Every structure is written in structure tokens, then in C-alpha cells.
Image 1 (cartoon, helix red, strand yellow):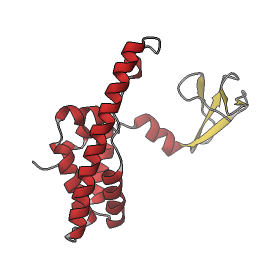
Image 2 (cartoon, rainbow, N blue to C red):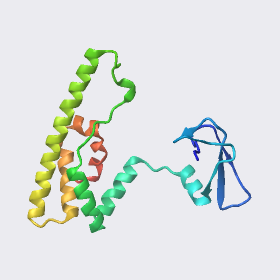
Image 3 (spheres, helix red, strand yellow):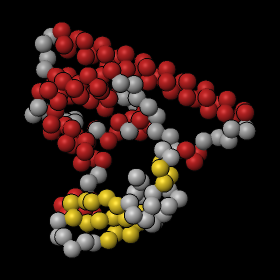
Length: 175
């Protein structure tokens, strides 16, 4: 079953004050070979519907929650210290600005740009691993390691932070 909540959707409110019912109007939406029919529907609780429509949550709210939880939950801090140490950064790309596949010289230049970025990201990941390993060796907590990795990320060039989205984390770090 597929319910398209962006378009071709009509909210239908049932008699229950607890749930809202959404039905798909499009039989042309196909996911994994299953077409939606006009009889397909999804029940959403009243509180979920309200949260969906009233939410002002932003990416920065989620980032703040990560920092708050790292500093209060040792198991979560361990997971986040590992994840932010060993994961390689990816460049945020506007797909509308990619060169045409038929423009071989532009694609060659873009491919070189991607390779250069991947090399830079791998070098930065190696530096994070070194920080992690050194701090683990001194007995630092996972929250301390996570925060030190975030401080390291904040010290990276601003253009790198912007390209990878790391700039979203800087506001939660003390100067």
C-alpha cells in the first residue's frame, strides 16, 4: 500500500476524535509493484496528526537533542562517539547543479572534485580516529570523546563544514 502525503491526498476526518484517516486518490502511485487504490488508507492518531501539523522542529532542534542526550546517556554517548569518529563525511550536493552527463569535460571536472573531496574526508576521518584512540587510551568518557570530536569538527575550515553540514553543530559548542 502507498499513501502519498505530499500530493493527491485528501484528509478525511472520521467520527473518532482519536484518529484521522488519510486516503490516497491516485491509483497511479506504484511502489514495489503495488498500486494504491481509492480504498487504501492509513490511520494516524490524533496526537501524531497534531504533532505533524503543529511541529516547528528544525534540524538544529535535533542536533541539540543529540548533544543533550550524549551528555546524559552513557550508552548513547558511546554510540555517537563511535558514529561520529568512524563515519566519513559526505558532501551535500544540489542535484540541480550537477553537470550534464553529455558534457564529458564538465563531468570529468566534477568527478575530480568528488575524488578530491573524498580524499579530504578520508584524511579528516583518520584525524578523528587518532583523537578517539588517544582519548580512549587516557580513560576519557564517551561523552568527553564525542564533545572533543565535535570541537575538532568546529576547527575544520568553514567551507568544509558548510559542504558537509557540520556547521549545524558548532552553535552547541562552547568557544
